[in-house]
Amino acid sequence: VVFSEDNSRVTAELPTGESVTVLLYGATVISWKDAAGDEKLWLSEAAKLDGSKAVRGGIPIVFPVFGTAPTHPQTKSLPQHGFARTSRWEFLGKSTSESMAGPAANEPTVKLDFGLSSAAPGLDPLATTNWPFRFNLIYSVTLKRDSLTTSIVATNDDAQPFDCQVLLHTYLRVKDITTVEITGLADATYIDKVDNATTKTSTTPTTTITSETDRVYTPASPSSPVTVSTSGTPLYHVTRDNLANVVIWNPWTAKAAAMADFEPKEGFRNMLCVEPGAVAGWQSVEAGDAFEGAQTIALAN
Ligand code: BG6
Image (cartoon, rainbow, N blue to C red; front, top):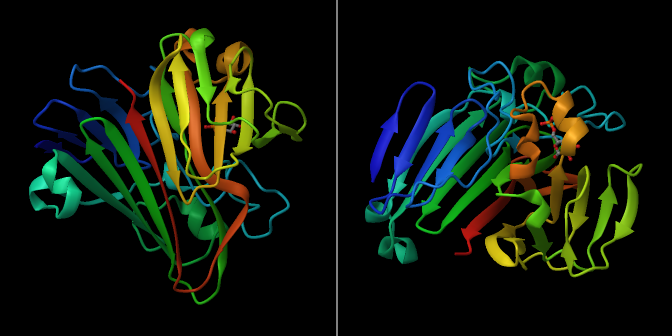
């Protein structure tokens, strides 16, 4: 495993050529390439990577609030999507298949671990004032030849329970959004955020994106994958571990135009956010307890 690290990012490359890059700011995965060097994630050309703003693209981490929650006393003063994506995380270290036991030992694998706690120097100052709990987050990014897994453990180190929401805001790269079909959402109920947060039920076996889309799905089966295909060919299978929801987001023309850090403006045609999360309601984490959730994005071909 080839490995490089500077004070802003960590990159790991498998002997077979696949690679992943994680920015310490937000522990944001900003690149995931296959063996041919093809990028799997969408990253805006105008994304700020200098720690001045949450990264537009890649995989930002949403914690402890999804969107804003003006009526939820514990999180009502936090910025949109919380502070994990605007804090500087610490790189805790790496493990490779050589050092792993079990199935991982048999295939090239690298796992990168990152940490953020209430005592961390890199914590967004907004967290301390607006969410005064003692907590510890561990985020692990595991690269295998044909998949990327990202998992989070949120531990409550406080003497009282706290509520949180967790979401992995993955921007998948696609060639042409008009040819994309999403399966695995049939019969799922969803909150349609572009239609006054109305609750609806998905009735068709496939979902296509033809306009601004912002939906919080609760798929019927927590373990069945959400598959993103293009012109009938599967590209990505997204599976979830302990994350009951999937947000499907595409800003389309007007919303993309309105985001200063979204470039090129036509870039919405090359991205689809498939965001596994626990965001419908709250996870109450008892003192000393932890919430764990993970996504795996498997390459379908
Ligand atoms: C999605 C939300 O998860 O994130 C959308 O469902 C939101 O409502 C989008 O617009 C992007 O959020 P932000 O804060 O990164 O612009």
